[in-house]
Image 1 (cartoon, rainbow, N blue to C red):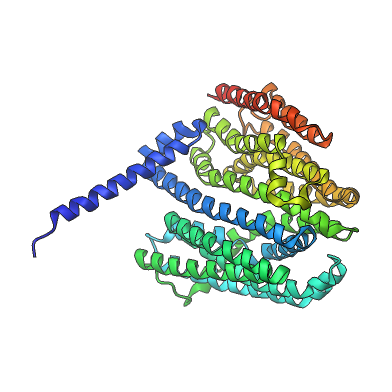
Image 2 (image 1 turned 135 degrees about the horizontal axis):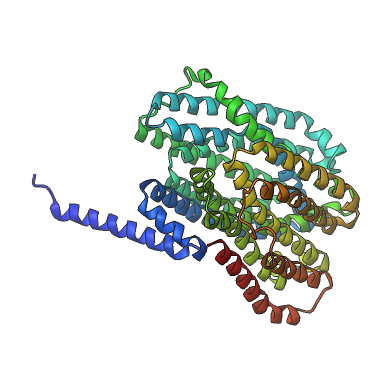
Length: 518
């Protein structure tokens, strides 16, 4: 049989066109501040792989998160404010146990599988097996703990004895989530970002009907079981994807001998756990204070709705973290002012430019969630959460600096200080409901960030003028001013008039900061 040269040429052309489309699309959506680095990435084989991976991660997760937000809005409207608050508290409780169940295995799998998948595939297979065994073990232990203590937690901590059964259902989510974390980390180690994007897309397509139908037909119970089913599908899709990747790289997925890699857990997994161990328990404790108040679950519903917007912004910020951390780590002590400025400003810009429209037009969020959220309390809660999100994206660049300079213990102490402030301020401010808890979050993140600023300047870790400058003051003044307008219940017309000037002023301030670091 003669070879089909025309067909071969057709496949090649389609492949080239597909690559051109990927590159042009990625370049089109790349923020101007990062475009120079994008060009460098394209010229570097390693950088090109990194940029392509980020693109696919963003594409798949953006669709998945968008569908999840739509499902969240519909579930909130179906369940009502109080029951939606109960769902939020169940998820927060699962998240608290999830820190221990995951045991930092996602990071461990990513780092070591990426390191050994080609040079020592047998060892990579052992690490993959170890991740599976430990994820199942820690996930099972935490799930059993949640199952046993669920009735006690429901009665004595979250003031909802009727949620004991639902917390026990959440134990299943906890186990599967731990396994999912290890699987996703392993896929990232194989640089299977396009595959991860496909998994995220499938999960998003499955989660939307599951959550909506579950909430509609089964109320809170249906919504929780829908989360279980959704997590199960995610685990199944990840498993299928991992089988394909291990086969492609010739990595034997084998549990035999995996315990030889046990020391890795202490070198990498334990610091990862310690770094995040304070965050989820502190968040859970502050929310437990809230739901123990009169009408606490109604207020929790307001807070949960506001936090859904934060999740989207933080996701976008997180997508930038991997390439920027790689650039900082590669540069070592020779980080240029340009790169240092990009690192600080990029995530912060996302938070600020998402904040301005949300602060000027909170009515759009109210319209999405329905009549139960058309209250001044929700507007103030949303405004404070948006301000808090801006601080968190500002702090994201600082966190990358700590990681790149192996100052992770500073991160641990920083998180400990943050947790202490959050719990203490929540205990006092929770009397004002969701507004009080949102205020506590702002206070904790602001004080936590201010605490670390002297460290960055003393060690010359960031360019001068990025953290403390006239332009930075302008940005914060605008955001705080818009928050205060919402607190004062200013009319929509006034906020609409201020939208364009505020956006232009923030843009101008960021441009000045970027130009100074060039």
